[in-house]
Image 1: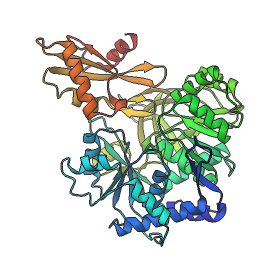
Image 2 (image 1 turned 90 degrees about the horizontal axis):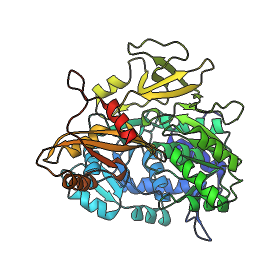
Image 3 (image 1 turned 90 degrees about the vertical axis):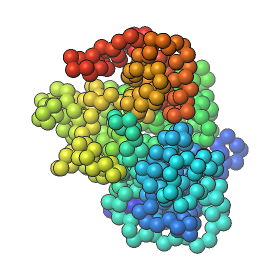
Length: 511
């Protein structure tokens, strides 16, 4: 049967197919976890869609969702997208100015998040577009009260925009990535097919649900497979995660390399029965081969790597889950329905095995950047090829290997940090004359941000650092804040005055 890749169609089909089978399970640390079946999930989404319509939300409106990992977040995704509105996930740890910018830029019609954050945002700057300030408690009251649900919107098509996810830009301002219903749902279906997932799949949620990786590989993967998604709350705690895997007989986990590194170390110190694990997916940053080998040696799991970015819904390549077809250190093969090219600086295809920029074309390519046609045109060519900005090589069998990055992006545990965004905050200090942020290698997170700063000769470096740290705490999410500060008298530069970031990265790596 051919799938119609829209949220309302998938939710309806899976409710009919799976019935009272559990889709969502939460409160994992208690004796009686809470459960929402596939049928109950469909009814919940319909009820919340009706509530949103009662609140004045219409197809095409942008609804900002700044929620922690929770069943409310999964219901909100289904409700917003099923009624033809557009979900705008926002990491709830972002600072007030960062959230305010997204709401203003996307012209959000509604905001759903913690009451104190909503109150602070309402008083922050121009929020004229936000007509409704909603809470997850109000959403859940509507779920529990039941009642009439909203009919599916006729405006929802496979090419309709399902969500806009903000990712920081090299200009220092985040840009909204527009993803279609088909883009995210068909990518999730590809994950199911590649990993041979069935309705016996039991997926443990380890990633932030506002991240595209979680939306595709956890939430929608479980939905399309007919499996069960176990929702964790609170911070990542390796020993607790091992206990949840054992208690709930989890079959699949995914995450950035640091998650597998920490679980690997925890298993050595606190043995647990994780024999239920079948397969794991790692992405977001290169993973050391030794980490994969050690983790697989302690478990029966097969770990596969993938590559992607938010602009690719978010996957472009995957490793086959069979050891005889897998190639360690490779990001795998292009997923079905996509094409890849590796080109030189002039856009010419390079020979097999030679490095070049990776270009991708297919259903998973974003629709563009929200209201940024020039940036969109710079990223996506007229014939559909998306420039990833990442350097790859491809072997004779089609397997892809990450080599380097054209962009200056710092990848911290799967999250992108763009130096200019952080630098713009540092420059607000009166004593800062020059500031550059680069990534330094980190065993757990892949990279950490390190700041190189030149200050006025009369300023005290220790005092300036304390003030910069306070400024970053106010303006930036925790993962974006520099972990180290180096005060310098000058910077290595080209003859035209452009700073040599590669030399700064070398210095940061050796200090």
